[in-house]
Length: 253
Image 1 (cartoon, rainbow, N blue to C red):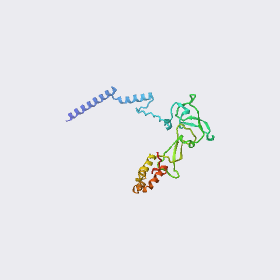
Image 2 (spheres, rainbow, N blue to C red):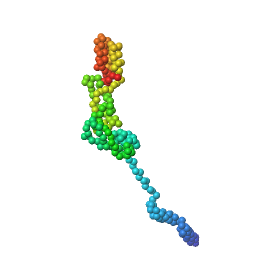
Image 3 (cartoon, rainbow, N blue to C red):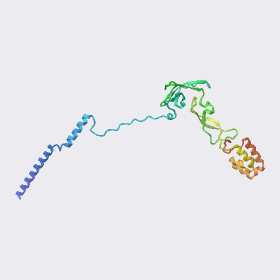
Image 4 (cartoon, one colour):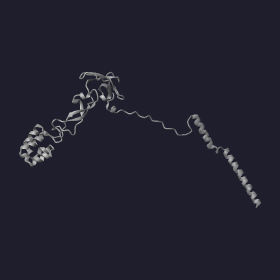
């Protein structure tokens, strides 16, 4: 038993020597230090090139675009500066001018608006206009909102508050949008000739009142046979002079 144990120990000692020899041979061949040498070479390369050893490169920042004003889309490009709409230019106005007189103001195009002057320059230019505020312009020079609930046939004639805007090719002083009190002058599509014809022919049955939207008066005329003819004659006169109109308060066509 002792001899067998000695033989086993000698065999194990020989195996250990073989294992140590093989490991030293593997290291001397250069394969065991591959990862270490690779890390050293990458570090030296990064030092030479001046870049960090990490392969992550931050994304470059994209410059934010400048916003375009809303008026640029309504301003013609490369046209004559003096023909630009008023909202596309800035003028040095003088409010002490004489009302109704023709005056000239020095103007320049707003930022991001490209135009040329009479001498192919893009600097300042002159604009001729009449010395008056925008709300003093004739009605043909501005557009106003239409009413929806005012009556045109009334005594006295009703007015409504409208928001008016000056036309693009008109130059004036002050705000180009302004409120104004105007007379009710809208129409709902009712014809005066049709109403008068119905009043003469079928007025005894209330056809004229039904046509104008006055169904209560129409029923009264229908069941009273036109007020025995008296109401019919009165309505012919009232519709003829325009005193009786559509129930929605609009004008005749």
